[in-house]
Amino acid sequence: MEEMLTRIAEAVAKSGGRAYLVGGCVRDGLMGRPQKDFDIEVHGLFPDELRRALSPFGDPLTYGSSFGIISLPQLDIDIALPRKEKANSDGGHRGFDIDIDPFIGTAEAARRRDFTVNALMQDILTGEIIDHFGGLSDLEEKVLRHVDPVSFPEDPLRVFRAAQFASRLSFSVAPETVRLCAGIDTSSLSPERVEAELKKALLEGAAPSVFFTVLQEMDQLSPWFAEIGDLSSVEQDPVFHPEGNVFVHSMQVLDRAAGFRDRVSDPYAFMLTALTHDIGKAVATETVNGRIHSYGHEVLGLPLLEQFLERLVSRRSVREYVLNMVPLHMRPNVAAFNRSSVKSTNHMFDEAAAPEDLIYLALSDRPVKSGDVPFSGDSGFLFERLEVYKETVSGPHVTGNDLLEAGLEPGEQFSELLEFSHKLQLAGIDKESSLKQTLAYARKLRKNNGQQL
Image (cartoon, rainbow, N blue to C red; front, side):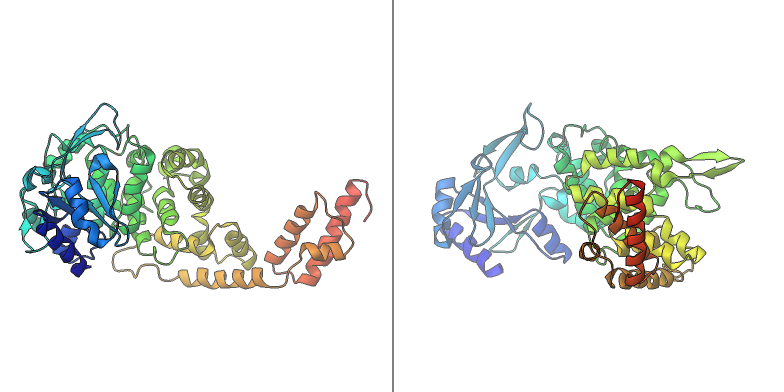
């Protein structure tokens, strides 16, 4: 890629322009992080001149012409012309008037960027870093600081970008940027844009909790994450939760869950479950005889959870996963503590959308005392029982064909009979005995309905 970037920059220079790397790829390169996307900005050439300069590299495509972006699809490279942006009355991501100006200069071109560390530019041919706004210093100090106090608030998404960058890069947010973000109205944003920033924090952040603690500091958890913010006012029994309120606990669980992201079936759904597992404590917590309890919170909070997911989460399968797993989140640890029967743990795993993920969720929800080895001890019991469950459900079992061969006709009761036989299987009943009991149950149902087998 480096050779291709150089060839493009040389072609641009031959036509009288200058090509710069801009944005996150410059920042990540200076930090020693992998550079995923290379954004190029070309100064000194009009659009037609730039297209001619790029023609040796394939057929340049212009898309989003008002944004001055030219694509080289064969190389998977996008090249932009410098531009000014000004918010208009439309609001949202498209609510900007764009003015392309190839001769605006690097300082004004960089001024539209969000943070100083993202406003750095690098001359592709010379390697020179161009820093008009103190980005190198902020990079050294690991600080996110807005570039321009006038243009920054024009895109409310920058509130959430600040939070997700802080989480992903382990940066702090400058106090003046926190104050600026606190005054920005984010309610006009689309759910898709907010979810995209949330997803980056949950899946890429070393400490995903930082996303929420930064938003809390900015007083920006509402409206998008109001249910999470409300947990700050919900106290817990200090005997079992010395860490503090439910928000603090949820953030600790979220960060522990990040250690399991590479082991679970759906990392995004799993992290959302860890985030919202105790959302019901906001409606279930009460003090009885001087002790704080949250009985039934895993079920009582489902309406709040549905409200949260419907607002933010676009993928239905993710919503279904979370709604399935949250009511189950306490059961593995209870089962391990009580050394529950195989039948009980089989049923528990069978109810879970992702049985192995449920164990990792429960492990994330365990408090870790100072000096303890995290996630040791009873986790062995749970994984052993998971293997028992897998062997049980993969073994011989009663099927629809078995019922047909026994003389039953398909009907409304078929699914009930198969469910009955499945419960017998989970209880460890072998197929032959299970079939006999299922047929006996079928006769009972037919008798109750006045029919004969």
